[in-house]
Length: 265
Image 1 (cartoon, rainbow, N blue to C red):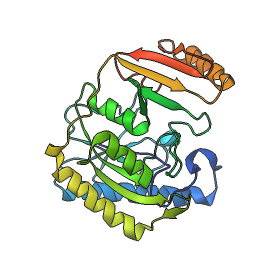
Image 2: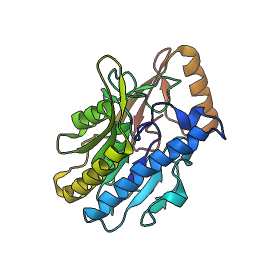
Image 3: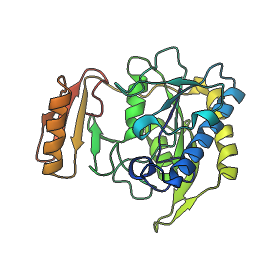
């Protein structure tokens, strides 16, 4: 299964899916770049021997992939009740395309965790966690499916490797230097890199193991301030009756989870 996000693909250096207004020509440009990365991943998977490839559009409002331009061999998965909905133990691996580093990362392009405005920071069982960790937990728990490849900036690739091990395939499609300069690689470079990476990831499936995680899972979420946290808790209680979060400070929420349904609180 491929899961694609909007901030990490080739050529992206702004929160376009959330912030650009309908009709802005840059939206179609960024959608094209994202779709190109997805198609490269699909091609690489089939070159590596995959029999079936599924795709989840996990970016903001799940309307980011250009369906008419998508490789026709891929099958689409919908549903957003929980992370990686549709995954089960018949899948051999998960590929994360266009991911980004967690909130607070210095040398990374558009680092955040789920929301750039609320400045969310997470801990899973006491360890700092971003979206890569969340996907790894969701894939591993119950279904024992490994993350086999991640694409994004240099900071994203470093975070993924540190979390999931050096056998993980990562593909860098852009970078930030120590002085903050951002380099966006052209599709002429990233497309073949992604194809080669996906091919290798599929061929090395047997070397990848599910992310080790213990449940009950202790999740801690910190938001940018008390006011944001007040509004966050109120909305959750009004719209999610079974929401398990509890206040743990002015800007902190905690929960003990038995499954992944409320993984991002």
